[in-house]
Length: 218
Image (cartoon, rainbow, N blue to C red):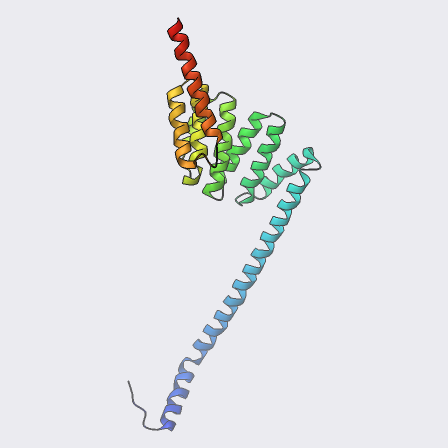
């Protein structure tokens, strides 16, 4: 590095450097500042769009309490207009609930599958999957229900998944598999938070004992 002996030499060196590179430095500053402004404008515009979308979703959900028919039509349009957003899954869950109120089980399954496919998080995906499995059990689609429950879910949903699995096996008459699933649900959740699991196990044990007694009597 060159060593400058006087302040005059330092000043002249700075002037020379600026003369040679000043335009490049200014251009870089201008571009950087423009980029900063552009980024902030983009962020502001994105925030405005997200807020508008949130308001539209809130208005849509509020309308479900007053005009069911209009809600269904508007919700389906909302999903079509806002594809690839997190609100698609949430709206589909609401549509599934509305369809269930009319016992439109085909519609329920359709909307729950939409919710699963567009879920913005593993938690919402698990919620939609568990609801779908319950519907499938109700419709006696046991193979489909077990396939739905076999999909990976966060650990916090293990108890609910195992309970529905137990219900599925029970409906199929597979008592031992049902008992195993209920016990797994209890191990994951605990009796304190879901005492109905113990009731299901007790009912299962009673039914098994009655069946054994009947076989002995015969």
